[in-house]
Image (cartoon, rainbow, N blue to C red; front, side, top):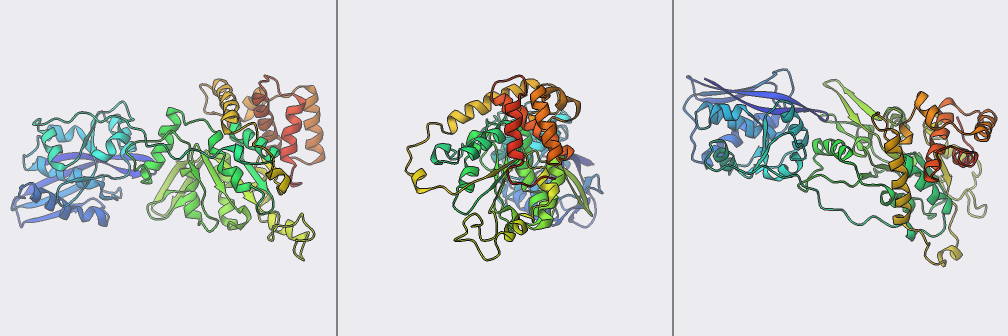
Length: 503
């Protein structure tokens, strides 16, 4: 007799159905697992044996063979423990075979029979819904998986409770969707004294998801400004929350019993490798750009990142997804993020102060910022110089506007864009392209004349021209204007040419 249970194997954020077959046959007693298992899966036989022993269930003195189909798909992770145990229990007629076959399960077993939380419950629930099966998972994963409304999620704390549920002795209630505990209160823009132009750029960046570069000497407030960007962004929509949580689930970052509606804010150190930023490594896991999907990626000290790492950002910024290609994996991850970068004007950081600048000024500034290639700079919509803050500014009273007031305007602009792009793949102005961009961002006669003169005078690339249009459209949305007018174009051009570099 061959009993069957079902689980999943992960390929990026996708979960592929795996059939776990168990055969108990005559022969020398043994327990073998085949089907391209990794070390963690191979060790499952010892965890399953101990967990069943803790329940006083003895394995028969026969040969037990577990096959995981498709056999050519690599099986990685400890979440195969539970489906292996269920298939084995069905094969020895402890569990009804039809109940096990109607269930997609995942979970790690402790030696005492407890179910230990594992990664990937959310994509596993999506796969179970597509196969019209229920999902059985550890209790700690239930609140995460239950966000998929089309599937019944059973969250069991132990293998014994799972057995009693499947045999009908003590049914478990379906799990309820849960939200992770809210993180700390976002930092308030009211804490920043001065820097009105940089604050305005933050507002525009948040409203249209435009990439932003802040350049200024040490202590001018670049990192302080970036840290306050999350407080300006609206919460994740239900669709965005599921997209983001799928990536975080396969990365093992959903550890609080639910998903979060807060937008992610990732700030990797400048020593990060290509695999850490773009994805890769063992199992080709998502990188920082994918973990920042629908949120913010903050790169402090941008020129200090390796040239290879910076160049890997070019294609994901343009397409909103990254393909991690390795010898044994070819995976696609989403990565529509808002990039905010900060940089000193030169290595010593004091280029604007002749009394404190190094002996290599002013050439050191061009050399230092020159580490940011022209093609990458061309993809950054807003470029702002952040001057030092004077002592007189620090003594000024608290600014009248904080994050809450700016967030209201940003939310209103986002609502305008949501209505504008309803039914299309685009969500914000930064996604608009082609004919659609020309329709929504066509400036009035004066604005077009200004933009054409700027494009010719400063040799704007086609990408730069379109990005100015997108920023101008966002500025008009913040202004409540249906038409992109000359002042909107002028402000967008000012941010584009702020550092004197244009490709």
